[in-house]
Amino acid sequence: MAAQARHLTLPPRPVHARGPDGTVGGLRARRTLRMWRLARRGPPLTVAAVVAASASGSPGGWYGWLAQTAPVHWAEGGLVALQAAAELPWWAAIVCGGAALRTAVTLPLAAHQSRLLAKLENLQPEIKKLSERLRYEVSVRGKQLGWSDKVARFHFKKNLRRIITELYIRDNCHPFKATLLVWVQIPMWVFVSLALRNCSVGALNSEVQEQFSTGGTLWFTDLTAPDSTWILPVSLGLLNLLIVEIFASQKMEVSRFQKLATNFFRVLSVVMIPVAATVPSSMALYWLSSSFMGLSHNLLLRSPTFRRLCCIPRTKSDSDTPYRDIVSALTTRYGFKK
Figure 1 (tube, rainbow, N blue to C red):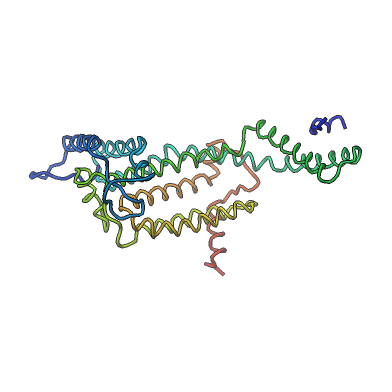
Figure 2: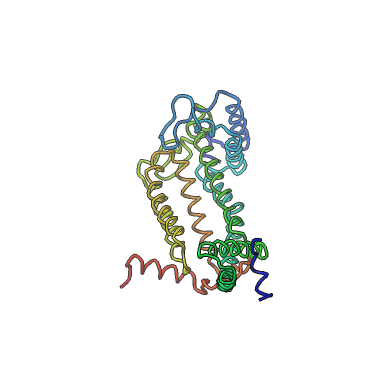
């Protein structure tokens, strides 16, 4: 009992505009960067709701304030500098910029999150064993002291929380640390989206906006206008749904909250289709490229080799054939094979 007692605490480059000679060079790129800086010093950018197709009037409310914050302007400057330095057409600069951000910022955080979640999963058997042991200790002590069921449950939950916290500290895997990816990824996505919005319709008659109007490719040559074909929005929705379904196909027990979260993201993926159809194509293109990189990173983090390189502990739910399992789970779930 002495050994058991320690577990129980009892109360006492855009498509550059070309000159007459048809040349595009570093001088033009530097001029673009200067023009963007001059536009920044001019009147406030004109923005409207994020789901509107064009802007009119002056920005107001929280959206107008957010669109003029320093992080959004930093993102604008970064996009213009990337395009000017790489001398890429604007559609390629947006895709490459989104891919670079996801790879340089969110991939390391996603690997860190996977490492924490693996540690948490490996802790569950130990937590279950200690929980059963604690339940027995509380039951014995409750009978000795004449506790009611309510009092016994109180002491059980109190001491179980303490034990679990000690395990989290011991293994350095508190669940809140796994949310760091969300706290970084969502603001970054919002700031870049608003920066693209400002470049597309915010600084009217600016050179950057003129370049955006001819900086697209294929069917979306005008990056300042919504995609009237809905190809980008529908592709975005399907890609996001695929990411959600791949996550849902994991061979591990999920809580009721996780099931609700999965259904929420399914609905959100569908809702984003009409939203993406009403914003400038530059934003829809960034969202699509960002989601594609997210899917790629999700698949990469399933690789046993990559997980070993990232020092992610092996868990009971890990598979030696993750990609085959994903295909099998998706085909079984949606009846693609008999």
